Image 1 (cartoon, rainbow, N blue to C red):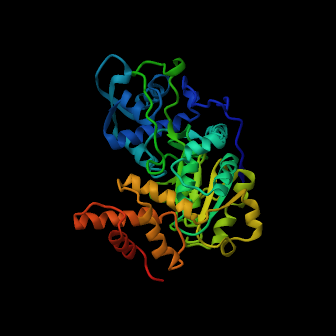
Image 2 (image 1 turned 90 degrees about the horizontal axis):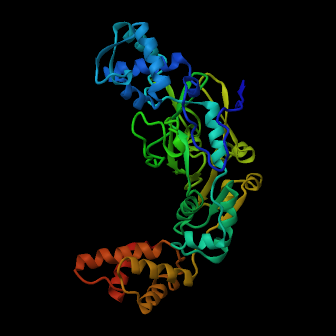
Image 3 (image 1 turned 135 degrees about the horizontal axis):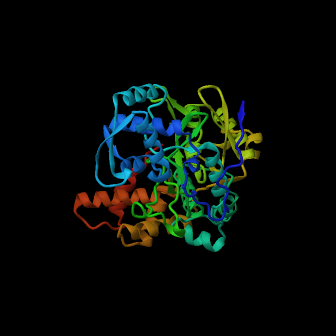
Length: 441
């Protein structure tokens, strides 16, 4: 059975989507029973809370929402008022009764989730679709400014712009140490500069899925109005079940398995954790060191065929039900293995942009070396660099790598610190640094 997104209630302009205002109980999109259970579980763990504390913890307004829940729970003797810090119900101190404790324990058998109230699934879909296409577009001028910290070969630079604007898929390949990961992260920062809203959690068919992840998401602090004041910008208080974050750039490496791309059900707590690509919605999903995962590259790539072509993904609940979720993700594969060993022509055809990140030229290497030397407060010396290139690259037929200047100069600084001498590009320090860094193959 497929769950199709309904026409959501929060259709807004894709140019400036923001969470709607919660004015009534119905605006939450949640059932009274669900919120009653959430309040009881919260009181069961916390012991006693004021109405305002419950509102802050559940991220829904007390007036017209939480107050309705508390009226019912008091009437049915699931909670009782044991004190008050003021004249309004929001300041009442609520405590769970024995009867309420029994119901809370029963509900905890279904799910132990306690936290911000979830957002209905359809509202999540609408939000992602509205925000997913709001990535910044780039042009050569913006590219030069955003990537000025990188030394890129001209052909690589020219290919990055169209790939970034596509917002689809990107395959970076080439020898190790030439900055593929750095390039991918720079693309993310360049086109994902504007912020988005995501929910703390969503609910579908009674199942809760946690979306917000403090490790992978960077929250943007928002100024909350004083309690009791309805307005923020535009004279309204937005739905606090949504959190503003920087557009995500989620990176995984060799630890990625197929199970990390599916809904992860916790059998003890009985709720789900969103998979990586769902957490990356509206941003970038970078699969680094592609080909070194514990699953076959072909299996991993086959997982992305439908999402890349249709911009939708299909996830399965533990009940077996399939749900459709937007795939508004710039997916980037980065590898230092030969593409022909990893993928076939049919899959490469589905990847919009393929960029080979080659080793730097001698001029590119020199520019990187100069920049690194300046950042380490080492006076640049052309004769010293020429000595390094001749002895440790030309004579040994060693390939240039973009990471070598940084690594060699860090070695040089460590050696100079040990010898208590000034770090400089002389023959002695360069020899010791290079001999310590390079391994004879």
